[in-house]
Amino acid sequence: MHSKGLLIVITGPSAVGKGTIVRALLRQMQDIRFSVSVTTRPPRPGEVDGVEYFFASHEEFDNLVVTDQLLEWAQVYDNRYGTPREQVEKATAAGHDIILDIDINGARQVREKFPEGVFVFVLPPSLGELEARIRRRGTEDEAAIQRRLAAVPGWLQEGLTYEYVLVNDRLETAVEQLRAMIIAEKCRTDRQGGDLIRRLLEKGEID
Amino acid sequence: MHSKGLLIVITGPSAVGKGTIVRALLRQMQDIRFSVSVTTRPPRPGEVDGVEYFFASHEEFDNLVVTDQLLEWAQVYDNRYGTPREQVEKATAAGHDIILDIDINGARQVREKFPEGVFVFVLPPSLGELEARIRRRGTEDEAAIQRRLAAVPGWLQEGLTYEYVLVNDRLETAVEQLRAMIIAEKCRTDRQGGDLIRRLLEKGEID
Image 1 (cartoon, each protein chain N blue to C red):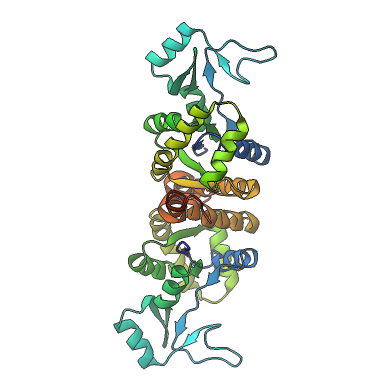
Image 2: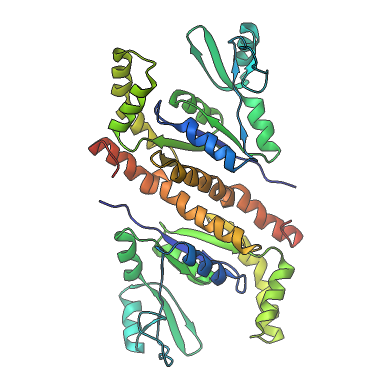
């Protein structure tokens, strides 16, 4: 007998550095799985189906959408990207935790379809630092950067609807906090903690 | 500007070993305060008022009860013991965390008066191990031990109403879990996490 695993959804404004936090966490907690996206983009040389992405044709992707097999999806230029529901459901049902690193729009869709997830919103230490990180990426023109910055207050306001907030200032602290959220959530009585009590009551022992 | 500190209430069946967990936690997290009880019991040689206990006369204790200055209290033989509300309120208002190690009846009273606390219920790894720990104490006769054991299932059932559950099997794991609960609770949006977002929105930075 085992308890259900957690889906941990980590989101926040673009360039806030959530990918860095997630990679550092996965090095520390090697039992946690990483949710692999499905995409219509063709594989690049060396990319393996099921590792970097699950690769799907446009028809296959249409079918995933229509049959509600994606927890979220988005169109980016000519291609679509999504989170397969089955991967998350299989992992958590088998007692494995799985983490999903996703933008704010995607997280909003996941929350509707999988409200039992643990939702974490990453903050920059300051708005100036967030702007500096966006500019350092150097992937957008000035007009796009300005649009992005104008959207930040609205995003932060939406952060208030999340369960947990994490500041990406010192990486070590951010990783410790994310790790703490995962450990603590498992101890919650409405998650695995309650299963422990029920096992003690039924069998006289936990293991 | 600072956020409110936490009151962490740790409880569970007697002899489950919560005191050991709390002492180990306080060695690791030295910023956390320990809630000192008030008692009508006279000080023993070497005991200092405000360190082991706050010492009060029966009249002073009556006054604390009548004026609702105790988060909980109990009579033990000829003396009374209680948790001063002011100590907890002052500490948390000043942004300090404070921990309270208390039996299940006391925790129930505290929850009514201070529902914003973080309530943690400690479980034994098995009912057999709990019985062994009670017997090892050697402070009670067989009839008292039997009464205590008969009460355990009811207590465990009550554990289901707590937020968090902790198994006192390996001390190191139990302390890590309690530490994780404290770190994670501070990140919750309805606690300090929300203050961080509001600071970013108002001042453009968190510090």
